[in-house]
Length: 363
Image 1 (cartoon, rainbow, N blue to C red):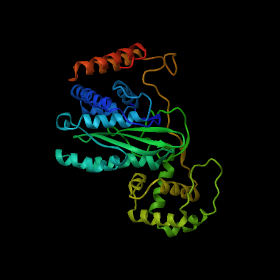
Image 2: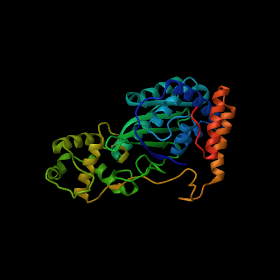
Image 3: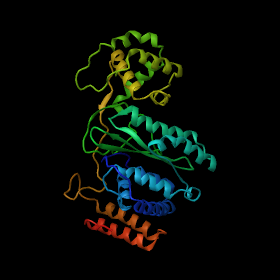
Image 4: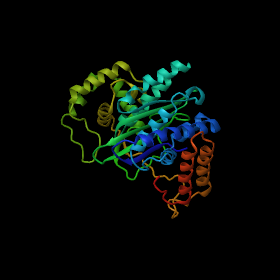
């Protein structure tokens, strides 16, 4: 199972109305067939796979490599499956911009209607956003968060952040089923075309600093005030990614007073504390280095992976059986979809060109 991150150029503009209407219809029918044949949990697994998600967007006919594929596909799924929740068992909350901030409310509304416990789902939604914005500080500001879940409590998340300096977006995929920890290597198969030096508090090698930051956050601020004062004149070697910032020691003491009141039991509890964000985590990581001599990981959690291999044998030969299976699953879904004959034939034609490796004509 692949989860992780896709790296995409930022493109502006909206999907044409005629295209988005068709995307909603086709996305709904393909999703309902997959749910009917394999179950709603399998649909979550596929959405949490960045390669399948990207392929899904391409089959629907949207721009194959831009950041817009994420927001448009999630929007088409949400609109297309609206009203099918009772039969499909799949619920979709959140979206882009201001809509993303309404995710907890939408989750609670669904759960009230269908008698499902919302507490754990709301927590998962908030924690995935906190991890990718505060615990993993890679320069991408989150602006899109879509939460998919089932009545049984399984969930997956597709969220995206932008980096205005590079003109790229990163899409983060999460799968709740089988997730061992929110704060220790929660991603896998993270894909991107380059690595950066980032503050990675969820790396396995950051276990020590996760413990010390939690310990510091629980202590009375007066005990470490002398260390905080040192931060005013501390100079770090070039290339180190942890700095206090421009708020100063007085702000940091207030943060420690707030975390001291909550007495977090572990790093996950600290991260989930209201008001604890990226700057707080950076400051606590810096203090941990001063007091305990432990360092966070600066490893970008990017790995390089391919869905089916490469045509020239790199990084490994194409797995033809797996490739054919991917095409056949989509073909079966489309052949049984309850959509118009014209749209079905167009989608089948796109799949045929995908199988042959040729470029499909514009329709």
